[in-house]
Image (cartoon, rainbow, N blue to C red; front, side, top):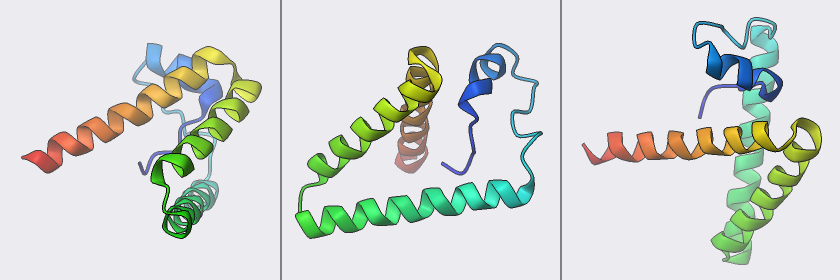
Length: 98
């Protein structure tokens, strides 16, 4: 979950794995996005603790993300992003199980 993925370049990246999609991001920009991601995850964890509804918080966050990403990047790139997120969790679970 530590990688910054530029959705506008995801299709090109997935068709050519040798391209580095972060070449136009500075290390400062990447760090800013990582901090933003981490802070939002903390907010979502806090909301889960306060409301005691992990499913509700997950659905609300997922709905918001899906709608915003679709509006900004279209269906294919949004679906590819979510698929990549799910693959990351599956890989993490596989590693943890070993």
